[in-house]
Image 1 (tube, rainbow over the protein chains, first blue to last red):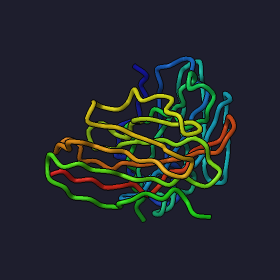
Image 2 (image 1 turned 120 degrees about the vertical axis):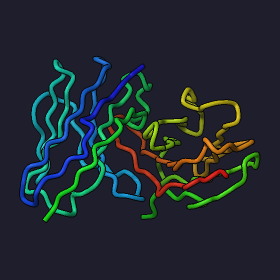
Image 3 (image 1 turned 45 degrees about the horizontal axis):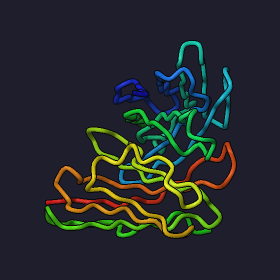
Image 4 (image 1 turned 45 degrees about the vertical axis):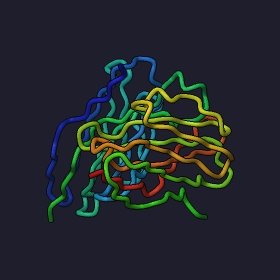
Length: 116
Length: 114
């Protein structure tokens, strides 16, 4: 049973602070890792993906991957109230037949609230 | 460009009734996925298709659930008979050909079985 665990939250940070979201996964064969943001009542939308150890930055978002520790995180710098949402960590199935990165196992999500 | 289109957006039905959810993937995408989201179980993959062929249906909960993709632009997820525990948001998603392409979710179908 492949598992993806996220810090339970909810997480509350003040506006302008750094929000740190964490995720661990059980399948050492996993190759690609995704962070999705989901606003209440909406569908998940992709923020970032990462597949190499280290950091990947995109604007205010930084994804960090450590395959040895089976750990992936998302940092949101200069948090804004509009960042308030549920953040979902997802891991793709390395045995998905190479069709795409769509066969994903999701964590339960971390609810982030950024207060003014 | 139109995104993934799902219908109905909301449905309330009585236990025992048949429910059919519909999905139109993004044009040119060749992989289609059905996910279900509940508070208890989170977001979980039910089934996915590649080039209209079902590849993995291991997430389909039981025989009451069935999915079809008769052509590249249409898929259905059917529940017969429906039960209250089937109440959830059902997301359809699609992705274009090629390794490394991410998926795009539709807005979801909110199903309530009473």
